[in-house]
Image 1 (spheres, helix red, strand yellow):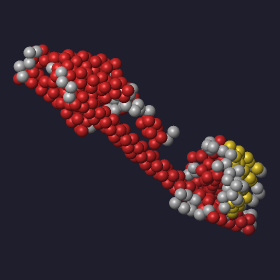
Image 2 (tube, rainbow, N blue to C red; image 1 turned 180 degrees about the horizontal axis):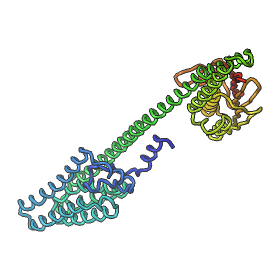
Image 3 (spheres, one colour; image 1 turned 60 degrees about the vertical axis):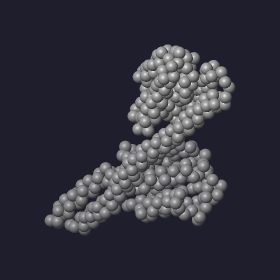
Length: 435
């Protein structure tokens, strides 16, 4: 699976109710757990510090709850309520239970601990609601805590129960049925649900964008490394080809000329010994040049023959079944020939995998007396070679293969028709060896 699908799969695997790790709806210690979404998202959240906006929102939630508790206690005392002392004590107890949950790491890591904490908050709040109608307003911060710490279905049920309890408690104290006590808690719960779900959706989208950006950066680094590697290999191949075509061929020609001159001299000629030494020196330097060329060969050819490299190439092709055969008596080829044939085979098979939609393909390496031929045949959908031209989406493979073959004096042909498969053939003339 690729990097981008993996990120989408991770995002899709989160529950619909899972809030962002840095959600503002709960206490700081609970921000790592999400909404019962599992330890995976929690560990990812714990690895990243909360954003400044999330910290501000959580502080606002703390201030809202404590402010409402102070308001309820203050109005009970200022209004001379008969149970004002009990109201103040219950408000202080509720503030203590809330602070304990905020400072307890287990609330953020365990859904069970979060449920116990919310149940304790609900019980103390119910006691406050029974003592004072001002406890109605504590329902609003409780909505956000429930939506943050519980799974969606349980959070919605808790919000409904909390709203009903707030409505019932207020009616029990006032005795008058008015629209305010009904609409206030219900509208507050609806706004809390919409706010939390909207924030979670924005967070998930932000996370997807962040992961895609990270994967893009990683992909760019991998692409740069691959391009550097390809450039190094291309330069090694160019050096090997240049050394073979200039230095090695020149030394081979010098050796042939010295051998011809040696044959024209009388057996006891004074220059015969010097010519023999010069021919031996040319032969030694030719061998050294060939060793240098071999040292610059691609990694696929470093530990085996061209036939072995082609066989490994065929066995590792994804998709179609590829068979490799050798015809004729194998012989050692010059390094530029082996490199060119290997690269042409790689490019042709890449075209088969990407474009041909073939079920089978076959590569044949044929050795003849004066030439070597590479054939790549597939049973794919084929194309019109006359209409094939490079474009923004590709099409440079065939010209590159043709250029490789023609650089070595070879012949490159493509035979194909729509629906009839494709046959690519390259024939390279073998150089004459020095006697």
